[in-house]
Amino acid sequence: MNSRWNAISWNRLLGAKLAGILLSATLLATLIVVGVPGFAQEGQREARGRRVNEKVKPFKIIGNVYYVGMSDQTVLLITTPEGNILIDSTYERMVPWIRESIETLGYSMRDIKILLNSHAHPDHVEGHSLIKELTGAQVVMSEADGEVLASGGVDPGQGDGRPRYKPVKPDRIIRNGDQVTLGGVTLTAHVFPGHTRGATTWTMVVEENGRRYNVVFWGGIGGIRQPFVNNTEWPTIVEEYTDTLRRAKALPCDIYTGTHGAGFGLLDKMRRLEQGEQPNPFYDPEECRSSIERRERDFREQLERERAVAR
Image (cartoon, rainbow, N blue to C red):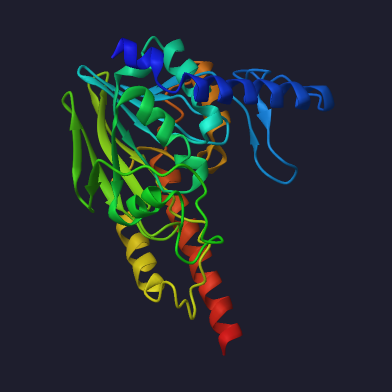
């Protein structure tokens, strides 16, 4: 494995790293970046009107769950005695940042055995190909989003029909309720159609200081880009998303994350955790429930607007 790690795709990895460095240098020359605790100044800002995406200091959320992503794109590392599990890969150019974060925590990229996913949009899976090459990790996806991943991001009803990233064929297809187990750690898949047809929320139980916590990694529960009324590409979207929200509300949830940092108050909770706040600021069952209720309100309002236009 060492020779493979040294030989495979280093040109791609270095290219992604250099691209990030060059982009950062250009942006730093034109932007005044205000220092924020936990941020690296070599961070990258995306185009005007889009989310700011900068590297953040990796940290433990709770138990064996670590945050190794950026301020916008969430990447999670779950450690086990027999290797580690990674959820999402973000953009390929960010893979060096993910690797650096993992190593900062004292772990090795080579120990990633399973690569999970929230949904198959480029900002969450473009790096899958490179991570797969570098680690040999088993790629696990839902059936619907696995088809999108294998096509390189060709998503029916969205985009122009051209590939958006390097295709990766999943090693294992999971369905709703299936489990992924490694080193005594088990995650359960909840396929929640909506943001994509195969968007997958992962849940697990974490023990810390003699207490058990239900942890939910939301896989894209809102932000529907599809029309609800007269959707010929996805005629059952209203029924499927209604069922998604019903099942999401029923999940036991003590601690949760989302696919984007702003969606679960990442930076605020990170600072409070760093300051030693107790109980753990990521422990927020009430907000977990409220987040789904907000998604449901958004859905009802959008559906009513579309029905009114159709009438």
